[in-house]
Amino acid sequence: MPAKRIIAILAIAAAMLIQGCSSSDAPKASVSQSDGRLTLTLPGDVTMEFIRIEPGTFLMGSPPSEKDRDDIEGPQHKVTLTRPFYMSATEVTQGQWTALIKSNPSKFQGDPALPVEQVTWELAQAFIEKMNQLGAGVYRLPTEAEWEYACRAGTSTRYFWGDDLYYTDMAPYAWYDTVSDWSTHPAGMKKPNAWGLYDMAGNVSEWCSDVYAPYPAEAQTGPTGPAEGGVHVRRGGSYYNFGWDCRCASRNVQSPPPGQLSILGLRLVREAE
Image (cartoon, rainbow, N blue to C red):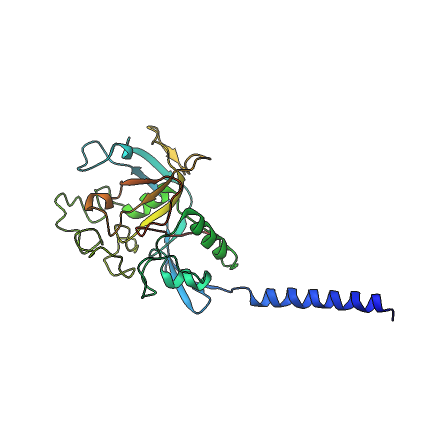
């Protein structure tokens, strides 16, 4: 057999071997479902819990009478979500993050159950890309409307546990400035809302997919924010924020360049099939 033909055959065989290795070495994940909950098992047997959120209609934003509101929370307007989705029960933890991305950007480390933070917009997108390479569903950031709808869990008060006008009932539900000791805490230690979501108030602020824009006055169906722009929304307050920053309607914007903030992490949505 001519030498050139042998070399060509060997090259093809090597390419097939490399392709086969990369395929077998690709991260794998498995999914199980039960009673409205979805469990995703990441490489290393690290799990992520997702809660099914059914569609519905709610009033987004805050009325002018709400204590400690900011003007960007209005006008309050009706929003209808027409599709169910799954939202992660906790903020993404450092253990979940490092199961897919080996470097950990967080300031506060030492426990894999701590929420990952110092997450820039670019890092959040890189993590989501890794999640979507698992072949176990489609993952993304929540829209701002999805986030507030899930946070409220059927309520219309300042917080999902009530109006709490003087912040006397807040500590069992949220890590915020006066109870956090100025650091993050393991995800899921506080009481969840009525739909089983933890740390929707405090601990770390969470990216939403929306580019920031003022609210419209008219009713909206499945809003996703403007198509373009560099200023994104983050929600939920953090360990560093005052109690009023953790209200359901509270909005914060993150202007580019976002840098790495120890108050900023993420929570994921998995699209319902």
